[in-house]
Length: 216
Image 1 (cartoon, rainbow, N blue to C red):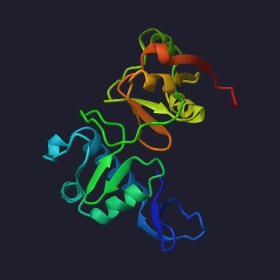
Image 2 (image 1 turned 180 degrees about the vertical axis):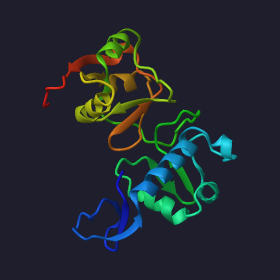
Image 3 (image 1 turned 90 degrees about the vertical axis):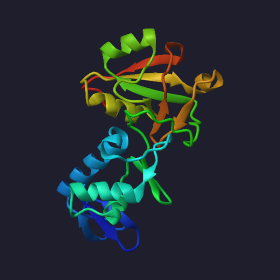
Image 4 (image 1 turned 45 degrees about the vertical axis):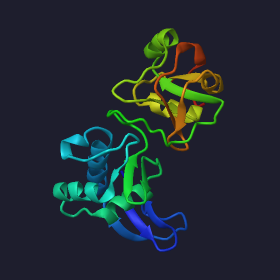
């Protein structure tokens, strides 16, 4: 986890130096970035009801209401720091719109995300283990502990995800174009992640096998 700094020219960023080379003002040290990020992720993805937070069907909550909840947990936190967390996040985990905020993906609560754009990629990818890949080739890809299946827009991203769990990652190539033509809803959460309620096995075109010695 990297610290958050502010560059007068480019705004919030993570790490020691901005892309312009300037060492901006320290906003949050990495320990507080981790604490704030984990708490907000939990509230927006998994347990808004626990804190009495009203979430609409697309995952949006009131920003000021969230800030009050965060303030009770961490006295040093405020709306400005929540915005710093969001704007500096290269993984685009969150979205701000007017006076609302939401997590773009990773939900276990029942959200529809109807206002996300349709994914336009013809091919998408899903990284997994060898054992799970064999099962998915038979029954399809279904969400586990999350509301949606998380697909990757690149082979590299899906391999990275799979490598967290296994030394021999398998990447399943998905015929997203055909799935959409057949009525499967696939939406774009950010540049690297697309979401679907499930992917039936017939849309898995092939599997790409890697190992711990592979450089590709």
